[in-house]
Image (cartoon, helix red, strand yellow):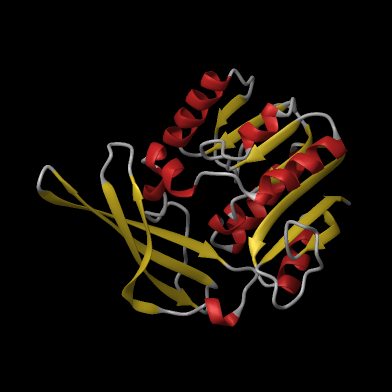
Amino acid sequence: MRSYTIEQDYLGEFLDAVNYDLEVGGDDPSHYFYIGLAKEIGGKVLEVACGTGLVTLPLAAQGIDIAGLDIMPTMLAQAKSKAEEQGLPVRWFQGDARNFSLGEKFNFIYITGNAFQAFLNNADQRAMLGSVRQHLAEGGIFAFETRNPRWADLVTTHNETEWMTYTNARGYEVRITEAQEYDHMAQVLTYTLWRRWCESGEEKERVTHIAIRYTFPQELIALLEDRGFRILHQYGDWDKSPLTKDSESIITVCEIT
């Protein structure tokens, strides 16, 4: 069986942080879910795999004492720049979620943007959960979401399909297409993305790759229990509706056992 890791050319997608924001930024229901949890729990908050702060900053704007951790310097630089522009006192840390050590504990830790799926094998999942557990204060809460594995989504499409078109930071219209391949043994879906635009009469192209691991519901329960977590709630959507076989997401809230 093929082994997948984060280091296998799956971080190139996050080198262009400014255009990343233009592609995926904007208001999202997840912001309100995590804001609500943070206010309910109180105390210090840490977002793991915070990226450019798309969720970190809305929490900070609510007066929440929050810090962000990410492996990519490019993403953190964009997050810091936006925080400074908005006058938000966020603390930023560069580190690998699988083995970070900040020397402090947090009342609430969360991972969003389906970043849980960036941990592509069992060892990486366990390591990340172990690091999170070490940084949770007594009575602390950990929350995250992951896409619910649904067979219709787990397919291979060798032909390019349209994803989106947007205007990048330099004012050029960029067309993005994608193809995907699902490895049933590893439970990993890999994407190849092509970004194409015309600049000064010359055709430009940028190719990146993304890999995401799908964890099935019963597998997820066993993984969390093995790493010392007890599930408090699982939802199928940001409105806290029940998790069902048709839910797009598995949103999990848990505590240390």
